[in-house]
Length: 193
Image (cartoon, rainbow, N blue to C red; front, side, top):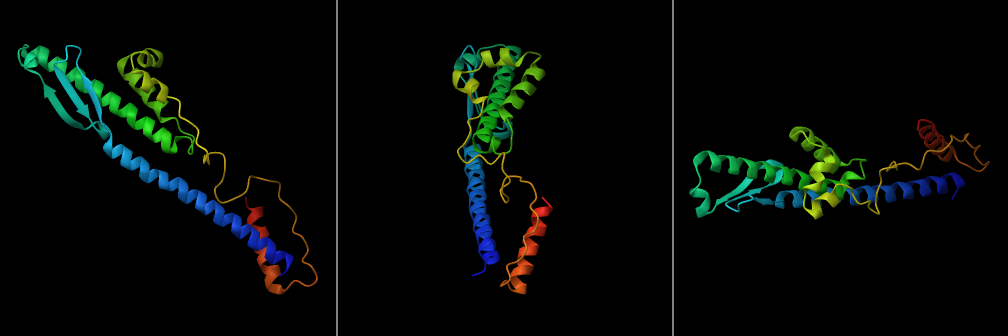
């Protein structure tokens, strides 16, 4: 086998390896979708009379009122329900962001948790630090995503790391016209990186 063909086969094997890596990364998206569909954030009011369970995208899955809630004045009950609802939806958004960060955030150079906290802080007229201080311990730690062993954020999945263009090598005297064609084709693609 000619040297050009061997080089072409080696590059093809690298390409196949990178395709497998990309497939593994995309498989994480399916796992992420399953986690998002099962997501629930349950918040109970300070007086424990109202509980709201929020799901993905701020959907309300459940609203529970205790007998004490029904003894409240209508305006007080409405305020308690709205406050608890807002807290549950906000917690749901933070959980969603944490799931996205865990699965694909670092791969795409994102920190969705940080963006959600900034938006929520701005909406509430407070700072991210103050908002984080009021979060449960587990959620404030989710704001910084964990790096994954298969992080492709700094890699092009289909190409080697950027490198200086190399001049085309002359074909060995025994190379066929087909080998030379493939080698020139491959070198032309590298020049366009």
